[in-house]
Each structure stands twice: as structure tokens, then as C-alpha cells.
Length: 196
Image 1 (cartoon, helix red, strand yellow):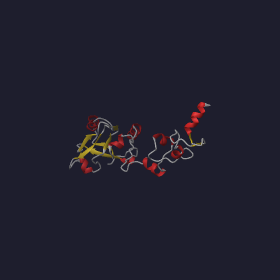
Image 2 (image 1 turned 120 degrees about the horizontal axis):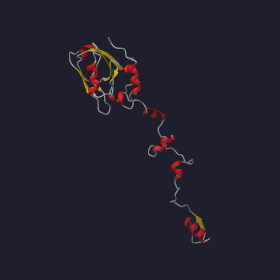
Image 3 (image 1 turned 90 degrees about the horizontal axis):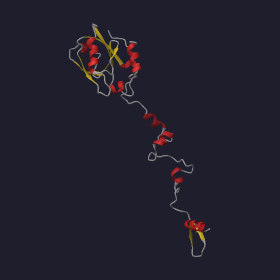
Image 4 (image 1 turned 120 degrees about the vertical axis):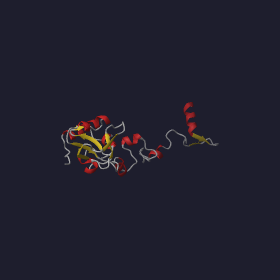
């Protein structure tokens, strides 16, 4: 009884008339839970309170329209698995194309510039920034500079067929890039029709 009385006294106030009136404890462990979470325990989440667990469980604060825009492709995205983004060209040597190696992160080579008055300039298809993907039927995407350029040098055809991806290296080789299997099939099946 003594323990009950002392615990009860912690939650009550006594008056001079020896009448006990009960008051609530203002610093309890669960005080304010209903205010924070609502009466159901799951009030509206605000962006200040949203955690990765909330997003994982689907308790997002963002509207569906906003979520759709998060996964949208960048405005400058070029699909490396769309055949229309590949440019074939047949050029005689010397072509007049200056190639540069991509960052070591990606490998491969791209057109840095086209020499004035060259066969490539006269033909008019190749542009600076084009990524070299294939020489003839040999896939050269992702190869080191010497290997990719070596495929052009070794070509014995009167006109060498080159296939370029028209877009930046991040879309050809990055996470959104074409798979090696797709490129192998694309180059091996000779799906790109050569220009005259």
C-alpha cells in the first residue's frame, strides 16, 4: 500500500482540505503522440518528417504527379538502344576525321573534329561528338584508342563502313546505355544500312 500511495501521490496534488484531485503528468513518455500522428497513429507526413523508411513503405508526402516527374528521362536523353540514333557512313581513306578517346570511365572514341576539305566533310554525315561504334562488322565501342583506330587502319576496303552513335558517351556507355549483348547483335546483324 505504501508503494501505491507514493506512486499515486506523484500524479495527484493535495489540497489543504485533504481532498485529492487528480492532475495529468505533463512530461510523460507518450504525451503528444496523438498530436504528432493523429488519432489513428498515422497522421499526415510532412516533407520535414519523411524518412527513407517512409518512402520504402509507400508513406510518401509527394503527390503522384511529382513522383512521376522524378523518374522521367532527362530532356537531352538519347536512347542508345534505338536504331535510329546510329549513323552509318562509307568513307574512303584518308577520311579527315580527328578522333579523341572518351574518359577512362567509359572507353571508346568519338569524333573531335572534321578536317576542312576532307572526305568526311564532303560526305557531310559525320559530326563532332559522334561515338564510333563499329568499323565494318567489327564492334569497337568501349575499346582503347589504339585498338579502335587500328580497326580503321586495318580495313582494306575501298570505302570503310563506320557506324556512329549520335549522342554523348554517357548515354552509350553509362547506366542508361545499350547492353553489350544488344550492341553485339546490332553490329553483327548489320542492321544499319550503309549510305552509298
